[in-house]
Image 1 (cartoon, rainbow, N blue to C red):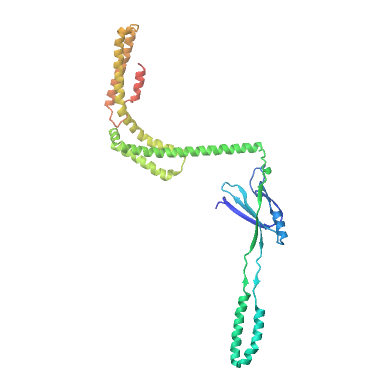
Image 2 (cartoon, rainbow, N blue to C red):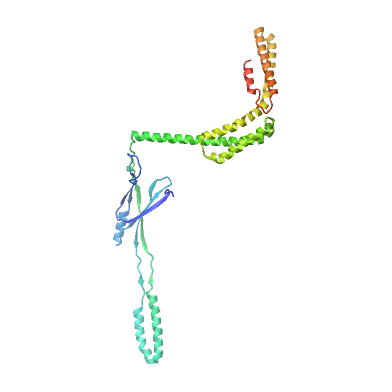
Amino acid sequence: GSKLDSKKTIAFHHDYDIACDLSYDASASLPATASMQIASYNITGVADFAKEMAAKGLDKPKVTLTFRLDSSGLISISKAEATVEVAPVATNETNNTNETSAANETAPEEDEATPSNETDVNATDAEAKTDKKGKKSKKEKKEKKKVYRQELVVTKDHGLEVAKPHSPVEIETSLGKLANLQRLDQLRKEKEEAKNSVESYSYAVKNRIYDEEEAVNAVTTEAQREEVLALVSETTEWLDDEGFDCETEKYVEKKKKVEGLAEPIFERMAEAEARPKAIADAEKRLTDIRALMKKWEKSMPQVTEDERADVEALCSAADKWIEEKKEAQAKVEAHEAPAFLAKVRCSAKGNM
């Protein structure tokens, strides 16, 4: 697993302030000019605490340092403290001397007043009671371990962090690596865009065919619709399987195949609506131009008759072109490529 965001603790006995240096392992692959040292810390408060404990007759402090490697890969000392433990002192509460003397004083009286068999029983009872009291008196009274604790001051030495200049070779190598990373990132973006493009386009085609069913049916045959829907299904299934991760060119190729079947359908749908309107607009434009030429005979005498005749000739040519296109379109089935496109009329109007 990852060692990031982890901690490590070390402990040792010491009685002086500490200078702690953190450095890379000798096997670390670093640039030739890079320093092996990561950071340096001054840890103070140990010496003063050690003197205080020595005055109490105690041992050297135990210093505990906690190092933290955060999620960004930066290492630091997160905690430092010194401790001294004092072992617990056990005390015995005993009254054995008093109990023994009392037993010695009463024993003779009992011997004189009772028979021998009764004396044995009483003596046994006395011994049992004495044993119980002795066990109770020998129990140690436990005390908690006493710990002297001192938080230490950790100061980072920033004087060591001196940036070293890179050699021309290192600079060139770094720039090359950066350029390569940018190139790979650009390729990744292009790949993602190509994949998203073919996926979104495939679903858009499928949705449009169903959502605009009437308009689609007017310019397609059932076989054409089935063909494009089958290709869309094949493409989306491919994206979930072999096409989950492949070359950018493959995504572009797949999209072009779907476009090859879908775009002609959508173009015929657009032309079915735009072409009649374009023809009507063109015919109205020609009518308006002829009316204007008629009006100019009186209102603009500076326009000569020959110039008006030239305009009329252009209008007649446009009329002829429109009629030819209308006749050609009438011979084409709705599911076939149109004889002309509505946008072509712009060039005819531009000539006038």
